[in-house]
Length: 173
Image 1 (cartoon, one colour):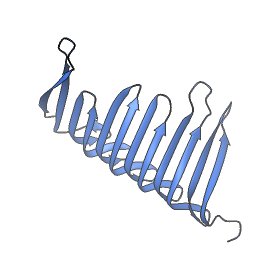
Image 2: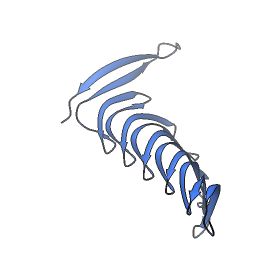
Image 3: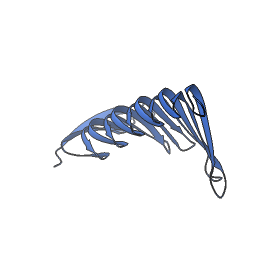
Image 4: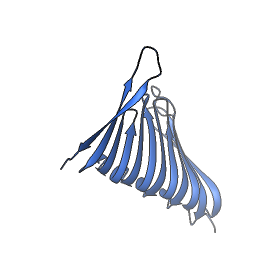
């Protein structure tokens, strides 16, 4: 096919961002009539801000018409924020069943369940270092009846900290 991408390959696009810097997209996938689809990898590298660290995002999985769509794994990594999501995507957003781990400013959060438009939506579990929330979510917020488990850390004169777990039933309507 003339003048069209066709077959397995790599497409790299670099854009300048004013007043300084640039960002680069790299697609490794199957091309048909200039469209990237099938199993592949999308990498985004942003070094456009002098004050902020280099930011890199990688997606490995199913691609449909240049977008994350289907099963895949998304990893974002910069100096202050790490995000790792494995699950389903629709039109470049987390959608369907998935697991996400995040570390932001040394705080850890794990979320598992249903996603819609990049937000927890439906049944799920969200864990932090001290709390576990189980129940329904709507637009990334707890909604309806849910269970909360709070872990308290107890120390006793130099001995290793023990976890005491307190269960709280919360009815929220």
